[in-house]
Length: 274
Image (tube, rainbow, N blue to C red; front, side):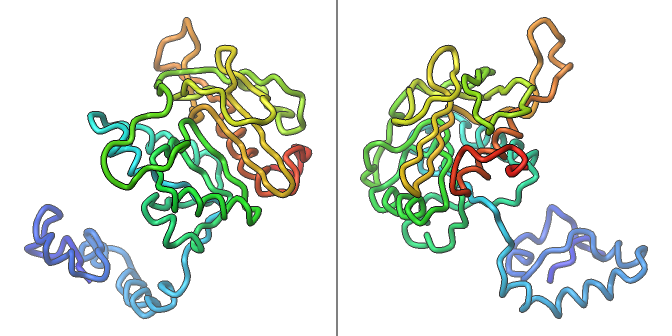
């Protein structure tokens, strides 16, 4: 263990030593001095390392981190940080347990994927990775595609241009359906991004500026959902100061979509989705 904060230690120094430690406890020395029982709890956690490492944390959903798409498709911007933060904020507000999974590991560790699967703007995927995602879908876990998707397999090297135009901003998702999926969803659903694509073949149930924004696909046991962009947690309606942000219905919709693709049918009553 590396207890940063002990005499002679600083958070900015001795990183090479801490990098070899099994765990890092910032300022633990000071906390041991002022918090009764802290040291005993620290020692107990060390004893339980083996037990902790034998089990992974439970995740209801898994989001593919689109590193390949970030590096090969957006090489001159901080797109990955912005989009990653947007998804983290949206998922945090759903209240669902979830985790990241690197896109480059999909094809050799797919058995560790816990569905439903979220694939956010991951347009840069190899054929093996695309087939691995397809197997996840076929086993019935369901998948939520967001924004750009992989249409042609990436070779694994070189550039990977965007298949369609990508925009960031504030875009309203207009619900054009009376499915129970949308029952009680009264707040506006705002997206922080969108793409210039009409989505996969399926039922268009919501639009963005008149174009498909949410498409449901159900074929036998297969359940896919495509959403044009990442939902926003809050927004400032036109005419109001930018600091006066209002909650949106985006996170509730995101939660319902993820729960719906993990069920037998997309049209379950809302009471069964919450």
